[in-house]
Length: 434
Ligand code: KE4
Image (cartoon, rainbow, N blue to C red; front, side):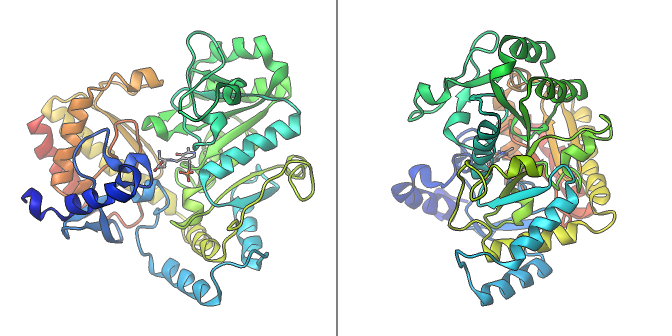
């Protein structure tokens, strides 16, 4: 295809004149991998078609929401019916209650939940709630974990032990991040030192249970257990950011997976998003009643939103959660994702390419590394140029993976074994070119 006939390129040039970078979220710009982003014209099932009408097998699925695949007929019907009743009221609706009850039935660590419109909003609100509940200011996050772009969370790892983070974005004053401590993920000794140093001042520890923003790095059981023990011991709250993992790695989220290995495990606050909106703007955070009742209008922690609990988004999310609650849904999704991982690994091994894989339910990660990494620094040992050649080789053949080596991948219930096998076949060809 020549540059002049590439309709993605022409719309991208036009977009860049009116939208910063031509995109409404940075990762979409392909800056990490180079080349022209594919502008999606429409999507259905496991596929989308770009401006040139090229078909792609979609392993991003809107970064997680599209767990049923695009355009599931029953979800579509629910959205269409809701739209006919009205778009937004700024007043409570029954369906918000039904959705809240459904979420709580799937995650028993929570008694109450508040619906919002994005994962960022949910994470930001959860932090404020933890600070309001404990009366403390310090928060702990981990290098490589992303929890949305709220100011206090835009922090890069300081050098040395538990130094307070330095702002990672222009426009975020150092004063705003002075109470944010950044530690190494999976580093138990650093965690223990931080709590020994200022445990009594820590409001919360926020973590991704499986770090999908490092592609796919599992928190070790020991690390998870120590966070739970130390937060309890020092009166801090454990915030589990399940925006990506929630209802995707298992029906009960990552907390249900870790509870199998840590008897009685549950976080204090859970942050959710993506799947619970089914592709519409909807996210949430929840906790035990004693914590949630600190929230306005009951308590002193303010939190609000014009479109919170939007009636069309709740219809989309509720139908999605109902459908993925079907018996065996996540087991089948785990097996399907495993087929992809095993296939890619076998082809990489046959081609002598260093390759490691991991997955849980419909979330997966692969690394052009011989062993699975456990920290951000290890993830970044990946040969970026090699990854980019793999990414573009697959893209040219119509298989759409995350355009960055530190992003996760997503399989939906719409991906058939034949789809997976075609992707593996394409990888066989691409590995030979690396
Ligand atoms: P949103 O504000 O993008 O809805 O959610 C923020 C968020 C919070 N927590 C976790 C664990 C997340 O993964 C995210 C958002 N994930 C990215 C993908 N790495 C969304 C893609 C994007 O930023 O465009």
